[in-house]
Length: 359
Image 1 (tube, rainbow, N blue to C red):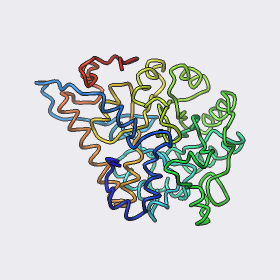
Image 2 (cartoon, helix red, strand yellow):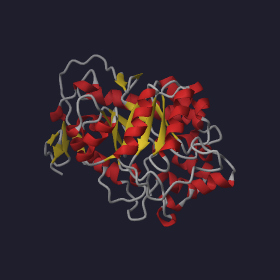
Image 3 (tube, rainbow, N blue to C red):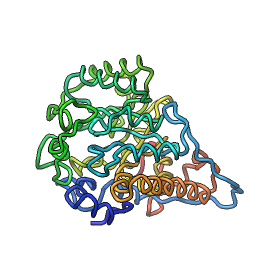
C-alpha cells in the first residue's frame, strides 16, 4: 500500500503499523488508493514557453497572514502519539518557513505553547456538542494569540467503531496515556454526540463570537456549491473544500473535483482553500488553477514528523515550496497568480473551465 509520503519507512518503524494505518486513514468502504490523490493526477499542466521569467515570488496573503507560499499545514489529532515533540516541532518548522499552521482541538500540546513558537496559528474545532463549548474554545484561542478558527462542519466526529480511520481509535490511545487535549479537560478528546445536529443558527453564533475576537473563520468540509452562500451568510471569511481526507467514507466527492464549483459559487471576498491529496509542488499549481487560493497539506507532514522529527518536517515542507517554485517557473509565470486557465487540462487533453470540468 504505497502512500507517497516522506520518511514512510522510518515513520512505520517509529510508530508501528497500527498507528501508521490511522495516518493513512483509508475508509472501510474504499480501496488502497487515496481518491483525492488519484483525482489530482487526472489533471495535467501545459507549460508556457519563452515567457522570459527571471524569478518566482510565491508570497501570498491568506486570511490576513503574509505567507511564503500558498500552502497551509493542516490539523491532525494526537500529536504526541507520533513524536515526543508533537506540534512544537511542526510549529518551529512552519515559523522558519513562514507557513500557517492549523492545530486540532484533539491535540495534546497546549495551544499557548504552539503559539509561542509560531505566530500564524489557527485552531480547528468540531461543530458538535453544546455551542457554549465551542465559544469557550474560541475565547481560549483568542487569549492564546491564535489568528483564526477552522470549524469542521462535515462529519466532525468519528461515531462508529467499525468506521474509524484505519481501524485505530486515537482517542482511546490518548486516554490510555492519560493525556488531555486542547478541547477537553479530561483524558482524550472531548466526547461529543455521534451525529451532531448543528444548523446555520449555531454556526452564525460561533461566527459572531469569532468576529468579536478579531479572528478569521474558515468553515471546513464544503463540497456542494449550494452550501457556499449559507457559509458566507453565517459569517465565514473562507471555506475549505474538504471531504475530511475521505476518512469516514470513500464515496464523498474528491476535493479536486468539488473545487471548481465551490470557487464559482464563492464571492470575491471569500477565500477558497482545498484540503485533500496535496503531495507535490505540481499539486499546488493544479489546486490553484482549479480555484484554490491556498492548499492544505497534512498527512505527508505527519509522516515526516513521525519519521524525521522537526528536521523531517522542515525538509519536506522546504522541498514542497522549492518544487512549487520550480514548477511555476517552468510554467512560464513569475507568480502563481500569473498562471493562465488554459494551462490546465484533463489527462486526455480536454480543457478545464473554472466553475466546472468535463470529468
